[in-house]
Image (cartoon, rainbow, N blue to C red; front, side, top):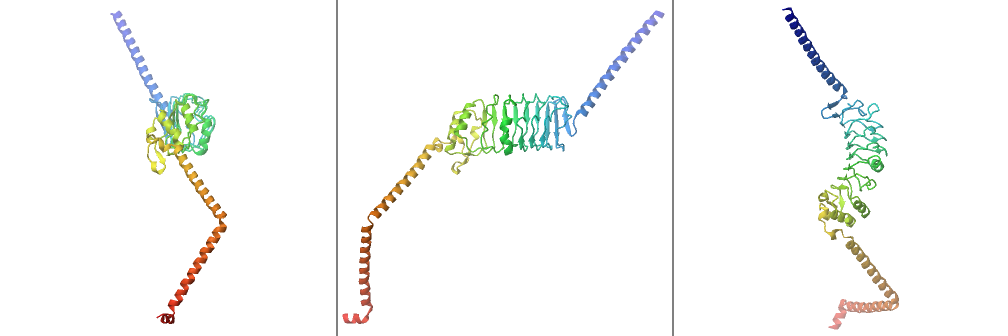
Length: 356
């Protein structure tokens, strides 16, 4: 009987031990979960919304003039919009001097005016950079240095004239070796930026809604050489005259312009709104315009020659012409005297009575 009691007592202590152990594990798990939740909330910057599941941090309409420095390490997409970041300083996105895991960075509508050199240092895995709708006045030649994996760069409605001239130096193959898509829409560009089209992996150049009026023959030759690049050129005010002839034939014979059907003429008035593709060849034939100009010049020369000959004839016959004019004058004078005499006779009533 004592042996049975001892066995029962031993089994009871064993169940109690396992029960306490399970409870400890349960509360430890709950504590870890609460701790991790509190840590995530603390790691989210002020005035920002953090979504750890998607790796997205969104910061809108703040008064900060700098990039938040306490971005969580798990962030893969950072959206900063409507803030007062006028200058992107060197290493603006490096957290405590270390690299981040960002793959997408959106900086639109932040009033950015200056991008200093090495501004995007510490973003080796960045694939997409959106700088649209800013007011860029200065872009350093090394502004994009270190973005070795960048594939898409958006600069729509952002470039002021000084930054437009500096952009070609910033878009170098050394800084952006893997750039695939470049968007420059709405920047009042008057020509295609040909200098940087030698980038090895560039496949799409978006130039819609700019101020491109004409594309000369030299530029068209470059377009033929860069066959891998697709050019988007709609919503530009093309002047459909003979200067557009080379571009017209490129548009007809090449598939490099996906939006070719949406290219329309803005000048001259007779062709406004007409799609460039539907123009006739004679509409852009410079030979006809040149021949017409030559014909007008030739007609002017002929008329001038006739005038010179006429003046020479008058000069060589000036003596005879003078005598002829004098004879006509004398004849007219004699005739006028006869008319005057007859008028005097008819006006005197005494002379009329004598005649009766």
